[in-house]
Amino acid sequence: MAANARQGDSPPYAVVLRTIGNDMPPLQGVGQGRRNLEFQLANEPPPPEGVARFWLINRVVNQTEANDLRALLLAYNHSALEIPFNAEWLKGHLQARDSSVRAHEQDIMRYATNINGARNAALQMGAKTGATWVLPLDGTLFFTGNGWTRTVAALRLAESAGRRALKLPMVRLEQAQQRDWLSRETSLRDLVDAGHVKSMLSEPQIAFNVRARVENDYRGGPWWATVYDANRVYGKSDKVAALNRVCATADACHCNEVEAKDDKMSMTELLDTSDRCGWATRLWYFPQSSLLAEVQAGSCASYAIDKGGDSACKAVRSDDATAAQCLLQSYMCRSVARGRAEKLFLGRVETALHAAEACDFGASGSDRVLAPSQ
Image (tube, one colour):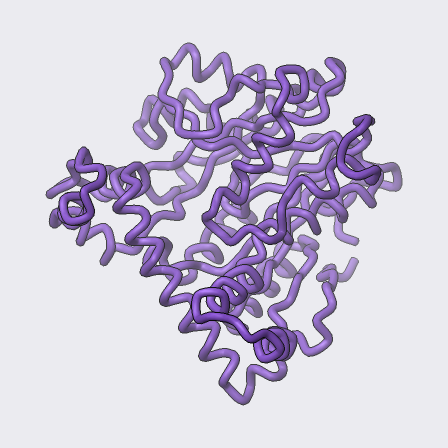
């Protein structure tokens, strides 16, 4: 296994596993996840000693895109677990069920996005390394040198306090990342001062102490094994439900005060939180320019008025970052855009299922490890 997956013969202290899934245009641009991966591989500094990096390719439907992801990881000498998209299995599953159109669509979305299934697989893989901490993270997260250092320090604080988990703060980039301002040396203050992120935390990630002992919980198995509900469909509180369950009591999670939603704060509060809890940056993974143009033309306000929902979104003739934030923060706008993205994604999956060549997609259905030659 590559050095990026394991460091030496002793178990790592922590394993960071990031999941790369399907792009969902128009909520994201086509190939945006791959471009973010290339930026991470080229510009993210190595983690501190005792921390291993690993990637997980999660049921990518477009096989050209999946091949490109594999090639990128091999080119940079990184290892990955791949959960393949198995068209034959999905076709058989759908044919065996006599369900409504909506249930049929939800079955496809649940299988092809597999967001919580991938998180569970990441936890299992990380635990097998013998690590104390496993971090099943979203694929777009990027660590600067300071981000790595503060996060590992937070894990050690959480362990010493007997916590079973850590809420890892996340900040969102306001524009597409550039290597001249996001690199090893970048601090959180640098990003805020330059306007690349707002003085605000977004929904946190979860780090799991897989060696913690939790009594009278989780059906007698490892306490973390059933935290993520694999039956939840993408976008339906798939991570928030786990956050609420794991951190239900004040003493369960380190940094339990970090909100499970966007949380504006002063610079002093932001820096203090990142010092205590660690931090990571979410790379640009926002809507396609065509969708932003609709928002800038007033579509969010139109949706809100027509549906009787939130009409506070004021992004007409704004810049792209403001339009993207408007789309994310307005429930009605986000719901309309997500519905469109799901419809397009369902069409892509249905096309794959009906294509003759789709029968070769992951025929065995088995997860597989991608490891570069030593």
